[in-house]
Image 1 (cartoon, rainbow, N blue to C red):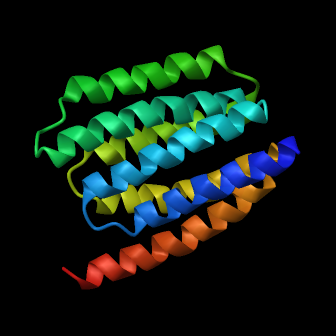
Image 2 (cartoon, rainbow, N blue to C red):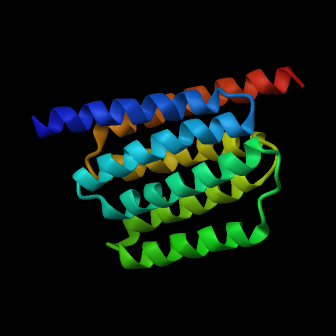
Length: 168
């Protein structure tokens, strides 16, 4: 029964992540990713994949704070970017469990940098590239439904890049 609920949690996380990439405005992307990251935090924690859980928890806070600033039209201070990157590195060290656990740390640092940038194109590009690394990471950790979700991210990422390139 526990696995059933973990699968349902994963489906919710995938749904919000995939639709986040399709949002035009950066604050809407960040809002959807806040929800997705929170749900992924729970999923990875329940599966005992603690580095990914920690990275998603930090990403939840980052996405929410960046969402609020972005929606209000305020610039995010560079110190916030540096602070989040340092936090990711610290939690990466605390949860280190072999080379594989470096993957979510590195990916999340790139997510953080891309969501700091003004042009949401960078979020889409990073999400697209990161999905390939998540496929490897999730497969190696036995998180198979999330692996399927990563393939959906790739498709959604390509569609959104093409879609928003044409609209400019």
